[in-house]
Image (cartoon, rainbow, N blue to C red; front, side, top):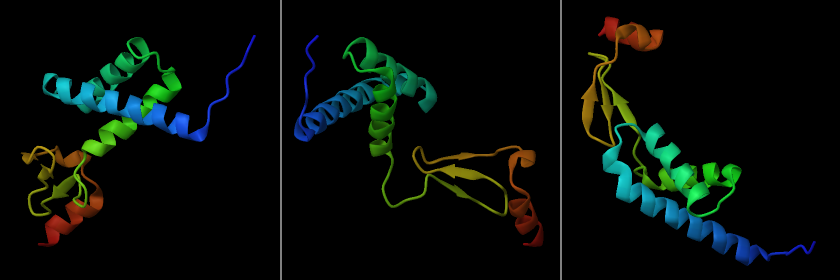
Length: 113
C-alpha cells in the first residue's frame, strides 16, 4: 500500500475549496429551512455524499461555513429587559420566549424597572 503525503499548502487549499462548496450549498438551500440545525445536517450530508469529505472533517467545515454567514461586530441577539422579548439580529424578528426560560437575573432586572 502506498501512502501519499500532502504539503500544508495542499491541505489548506483542500479545506478552502470544501468550505467554499459548503458555503455555496448553504446559500442555495438556506431558504428551505427554518432552523440552522436542519441546514447544518444537510450540508454535512452533501459534503460527505457528494464531495467525499470524511464525516469528522465535514462537521468542522460546515461549522466554519455557517460561522462566516453570521454578522460581524454585532451580537446575535438583543434582549429587551422591560418585556423579556428577544431580537434575533439575523432575521430582525422579535421573539417572546416563555418567562420560565429567561435567566433569573433578567427577570430580577425587569422587575426593578
